[in-house]
Length: 473
Image (cartoon, rainbow, N blue to C red; front, side):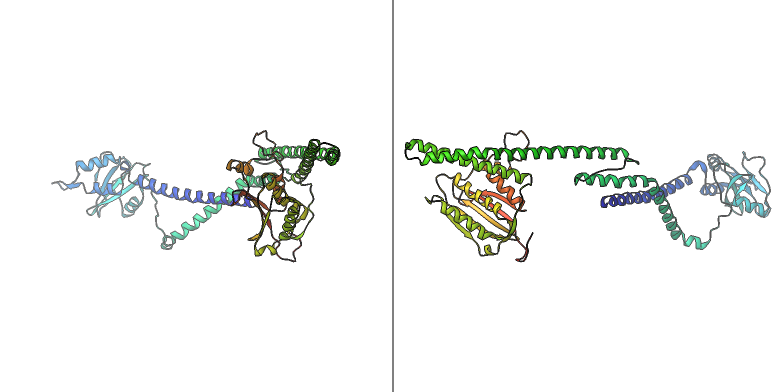
């Protein structure tokens, strides 16, 4: 469920960031529009009223007269104007387009009301003209005036706190709305994620096919059923192949043993000619090779399908490898393949946990490969060393070796035993495959390279026991 929590946190963070940005953008937009409307020339304004008030002049008869510039400003504002005299409250000047219902006399109370708000529903802007007052009546839909625009000082001082409180409340409200809106999606995401994870772990999958993501749940269930059927078919196919290999190996063993027996008798029959006995020897050796190949094929099949039990126990890797080397030396009557033992001081402490029979088979296969691929003879180097927390078993020779192309094929080309494709680049020969399978069954690694003397080299890395009292890895 970690991925679901991560998804929810991501949604919430994105939402909160978007909400904050929306609020900031709204504030900026509101301030921009307010400033724009306050600066619109066709709606006039306080500065326009002051400018018109300054455009008055006294005539010789003592009357007031508005200049042409003032007339233009008044026309642009689409407003009417009156000039109220100080002390008397009488209108001593009025514009030509003044409405008829506009009063021509104002008491102090009426004048204060007009200055603060409206005259006959016309919003009024005012400006001083000497001791007199200019009242500028604007179109009824041009301004909306607050009649009692007095604010408490504490309110003004607490504006930042109030703004922050409003912001927090808005964000909380939006969060609750958002969580309520997407709760259905979030409830559907959990089963979907668990279903996908179960697909990868090859577990039984059954996602409820309801909610907003029901289509995806249906697809996951169908995929799970298809994978399950494919896995069953694959296991059935692998079991059939393993049984076929085991059956063929068993059935061919008896006739092959008869061929070996008769070939040995013919080889030892002194009454036969030397040429015939030589042919019998070739038949015996090739039959023995066929028997070894069948055993290798059967073992490789068991290791591939994990049906080969491991009889593991605690052992000393150096002692085991030394016994294998001695056995090969005893069989090399012509000393065509001398063995050099290379072991570091740490070799004695290389205690491992494994199946001694299989590990012997792996090392023996490597030594046998050195002999097979160097029929003219070579020196074989065998060593055991401790590398970090692993035991390293090295088998190398100074023989003909392999080319770089062949080395890449050995490292990368798939073996026909573990490859179902119809590629023509599959590797043959079960020796190295069995070695790799045995080491992998012991949780180790195989490293293939050229030997320092130009031949072939294989290193087997196996995990060491943590202490001498440990009985299992």
